[in-house]
Image (cartoon, rainbow, N blue to C red; front, top):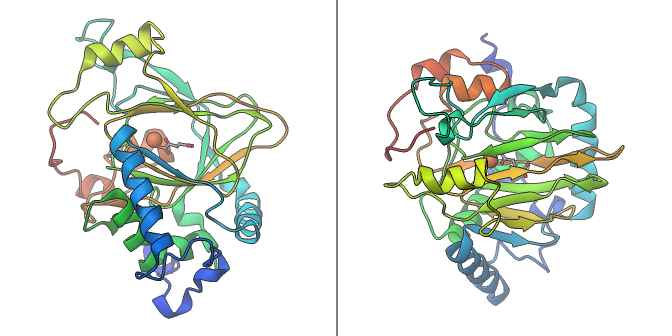
Length: 296
Ligand SMILES: O=C(O)CCC(=O)C(=O)O
Ligand SMILES: [Fe+2]
């Protein structure tokens, strides 16, 4: 049996009780006739169209958050602290580029991931991720489809963990969008900052990116202070983003169930190493061209 085969397989749809993690009266995501659901979808679409980010406060129920927090704490010994110097594109340094090129802007990422391959067999985060009802709801909110669960074995639904003094630097995501669920707030700091649509599939806008990175230009920076249980939908491929330093005894823990438009692709080997601490055979085997020409 290979290492992959020994990992938990997906939950069958009939094994997933939505009420285990969502108050279906407040958020009837299962009921396609519900006006409340339609309103939720519409408000997410409007927010995403306006600035690439939508936010549903209190979406995951407190008991589920408690269970996820307990899981993340049990798995904490597996958290890989990166302590890696990264640029926003998660690519290696190219010293032939000018000093002020954003591809030469490096920061130290001290935040850690509990990679997806460590999640427990009965993990609620895996149930949320495996739920087709969730995939359908997320796709409708994004107004984009079809979307799929991701082949990426390390990054498909990890917990990101930031302890006192940790920092998650400016970057673009390799995937089109991210779904985040805040599981535990840090005492202070840990704000999510982003510059909506600073690049587009056809235009890197390196000058605009440089102004944010090298000059600390803040005029287009937006901040989202997530609360425990909130759901965030974010189009991170076009909007550069970071998490400010966290402070205090209590770690910031966030679950990142990640859906994609191409279920076959995984992270590039360099990205996998920089973010998740290792590159596996699959990262080399599937190091294929992206549909867009963007750097990542
Ligand atoms: O921790 C967060 O809120 C964002 C994490 C993130 O940007 C990422 O994992 O790519
Ligand atoms: Fe990101």
